[in-house]
Length: 355
Image 1 (cartoon, helix red, strand yellow):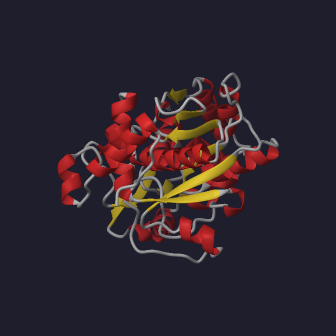
Image 2 (tube, one colour):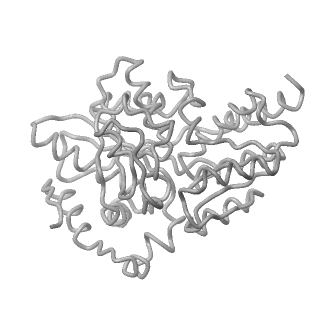
Image 3 (spheres, rainbow, N blue to C red):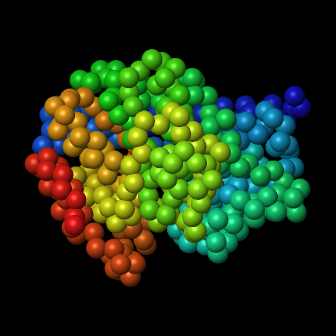
């Protein structure tokens, strides 16, 4: 290994060594004492999202493979959050970074990428980010990291302080230390792959549920068994949902897929602000819909236990979209019936979806 690569890996490991783990936050619900809900707060990473873990793994993976060298331009296709984190690590190593993203990516994410010295290359069609990233990598003689292919390969699913291992460690003293369900979304599919493989490797009975927004193919792929599903454009929830089945999506480790209306995700983040006193990103709202769906089924079956999900990123990134009432109206989203649904379930345990 050449000295620059060795020093680069050391810098990233030192950055990790300076970090403490993220919090596991209980959501105390008046309607339920037999089922506990927890949020793994990934928004407290240095770059503000779950993708900080992924970006670190992908950069180290590329360094160890010899794909990133001292003068390499690093390129990524992203809906924003992974690119923010990769820009952080690229700056740490003194590398040029270019993010290929849909033009509709939140301005807050664009500003964050630029803050870390990255460049944003925006495309009109979200489905074109892959080909455009490959084209730029060839044109600039750079390296396309390709999170959608390598997310599940770059992450050590057996442990090594991955997100699954830390969840179970933090649950150790809770009333139901082995969760009945862990709920997450799918962007690359890497998180669900890590969680699903880990619970099997450790002989846990925990099941993995993946929530999927509108205009995404993961749900259809899971239940049809086809990896050829495609759709036009991007999902309405930044960070999750894809127009194609990504290579990192491993259906075999998932126990349940739940499709979530976009308006339900948007309403959920407003509800979470009411009960948690903080803003969470849209994908956390998608997660909450899945959590309440599963809790309702557990209650109906007379089951007790715990359900764990993730706060994927901070809601302040979406101040001009999901938290903007004018934006919601302009896009035809009436969140009030869904807010009532969440409030009713939170207080009384009645889960009745708007008609």
